[in-house]
Structures are given as C-alpha cells and as structure tokens.
Length: 143
Image (cartoon, rainbow, N blue to C red; front, side, top):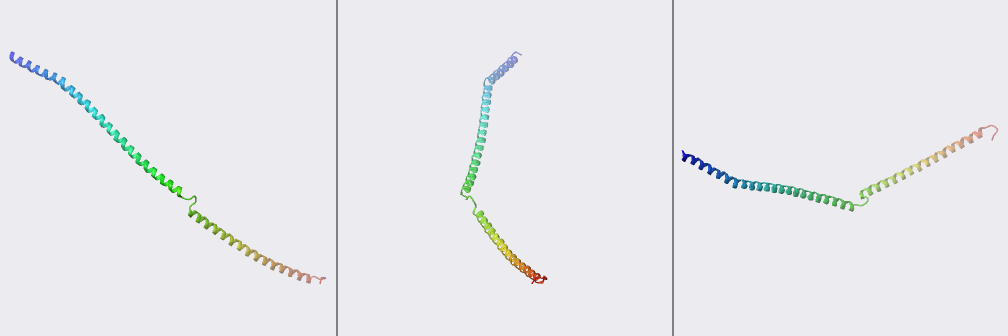
C-alpha cells in the first residue's frame, strides 16, 4: 500500500506544482491580456469618437459653404438690382399716362357740357325775354 500512497502523493505534488505554475504564469498573462483588451477597446472608442467628430465637422463645413454661397449670390443679385425695377417704372408710366388721358377726357366732357349749358341758358334767356316783351305789349295802358 505504501507504493500506492506514494503514487497518489506524487500525483498530488505534480498537480500542486502545475497549479503553482498556472498561478505564477497564467494569471499574469490573463492580466496583461485584459489590460491589452481594455486598451484596444478604449482606442477603438476613441477612433469612433474621432470619426464622428470628423463627420460632423465635414458636414458643418459643407453646410456653411453652401449657405455662404447662397447668401453671397443673393447679396450680389440684390446689389446689382436697381433701386426700382424697370417693370415697376413701365407700369407706373403707363398708369400716369392713362390718368392724364382720363383727366383730359373728363375736362373735354366738362367743357362740352358747359358749352351745351351756356347754349341752353342763352335759349332759355331768349325765351324769357320774348315772353316778357309779349307780356309788356299785352298789358293795358302800356304801349
């Protein structure tokens, strides 16, 4: 039985040495691998954050460039535009000419009406004078 016990003790010693070797070698290796994994993960997150910042920066630069272009073009167009559009001047001129023609027409109509009224008044006055003369002739004691 002694050799069997020694065999079991020898096996236990081998396993103890193996466990001791694992503790001494494997755990520091795992520890360094964990540190590396965390470092790589942090680097990956940093790269992703930098890519996001770069994308937003590029988008802002493009948007600002487009806005600058549109506003510069609008400013140039407005600065080259006259104070008053030619179409506005043409319409204003047409309206003014139309107004003047209407005023002249109204004045001509008024003149014609006044002339007709003067003629009618002269006719009425003539009729009135005629009637007064007739009446004066027909009044007794007046001849």
